[in-house]
Image 1 (cartoon, rainbow over the protein chains, first blue to last red):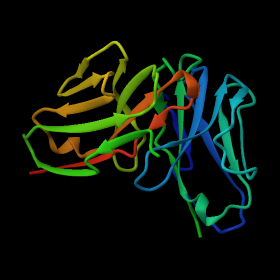
Image 2 (image 1 turned 45 degrees about the horizontal axis):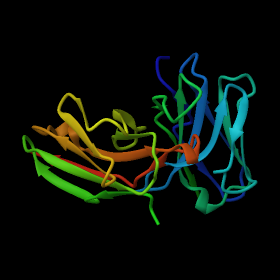
Image 3 (image 1 turned 135 degrees about the horizontal axis):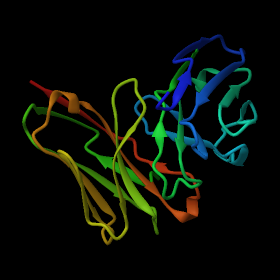
Image 4 (image 1 turned 180 degrees about the horizontal axis):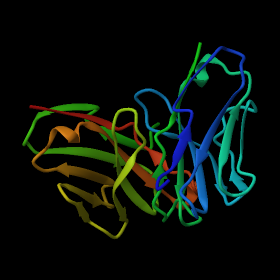
Length: 116
Length: 113
């Protein structure tokens, strides 16, 4: 597709379940970002990939959060043993260039996670 | 303390009217400032990107201004349309933060007929 695609769009999980969220960036985009957006707030940085290398994961809130991009294209954000505070929209963005400082970011529509 | 603060938090205007949204930031020095539009249930879409040396940038009915001395930016929407109803988010990037863009909480705009 022409844009960033995320799946699932909506996910309801019971507390303690593991979830996996998928992001298909725009073809050829070098950089990929994951953000967490709580209701009524702006997105908050989670992690950043340049091709397959995870260059910054400082925004991941705990070791229950794990992200990968093994072939430099599709990325998966995994959350283990979900907690209610994990409920949020998870946004993926990609950029043609290797830096968010100068490159334009294209966002997906997000995956809304609700943990019961 | 929020490094990017936006005001007002929300705004209701009549269709056809103009409005101005404000963004104050403390991130310094910064590389660029962006305005995004986020429709409900959708991802943010870029409206404008300005470097520190730019004072104004337009995108159709949207005009962003930047005063790097006072660390303020504004987004002016002209002749508003119902489809302008969305959250408008101010975003700052800076060398010291690497690839972590700093997002404001957004201003929720509702345009009514």
